[in-house]
Length: 397
Image (cartoon, rainbow, N blue to C red; front, side):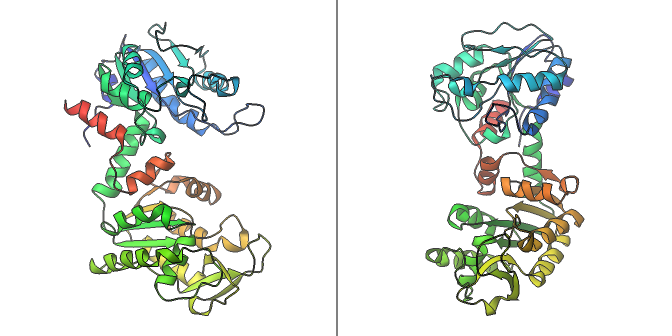
């Protein structure tokens, strides 16, 4: 995908003395007292900001935080805790600017944080007047917030449309490169893991991937629906019987291409959904009417692990069992370890997936960990994200 990259502009000396507007993703979790409980997104945004400062630019940074009501600022919506943490990471004071849409005073070598952009009226609907005002604040707009790339809002899309120059920051560029490597030009075989509680929420993803991948591993409640489609009993496990036809269509689409959706051969069951429930491994054909399937069995996990180790590219979205419970984490742990040991290029995304990666300590063995939940899922669906679309248009126009 052809987009202008901020790193290239900096290398060419084109950011010196320029007003640079960075749309970052600083939407971090906070405790009841407003304290930041996890600062990964802030730390991830620092390289782009530091790069702009080192280049001698006048730097403005903004982000959304939470779900504020447009036009109604409340103290809980403030980026003040973010400004403080950002200042600590940059080793300098980061002033927080309110009511910034009509003008910002910032000099080359300085950085300011612009208050929560979602408080501005017209932000979510990509209001043209608001977008033009934002664009007038800068010489270079830098989109570095992949988590918002699937939304066409004033601070993500409109500003890119009207700014003198629009480019991708290092975080966004890395996502573009990883997605291209995994889906547009993958090393084969390409294996995708799509797991979760419901087929309905990931049906479009399953259909889109069934046209591209060489192996489609399903897990969680999704796997239960596919087991029903294969004629197996699943007891009282979570599933969507009304989508059996859709699951069969995905199986057939894969089969027509000489690919497959592996159906679990053995499973780990319990009589109730609880961390201390008695776990029983049994053949998939032996599931009782009062059983809950809470994980894939060791035999299935070993087969899938072998498939992953032989893959050229792996896309991972979702744990294959209730990995939060020790008795039902075996499948997810085996798959995580197989991905870590595989020579394949791997890309992983989604909140539960990131939690599993952290739990099993395989961050350094995964080729690329995507930071955008909704945006990552839309890419898997085969959609062109608004942020990618407008940046590509500006690069080619």
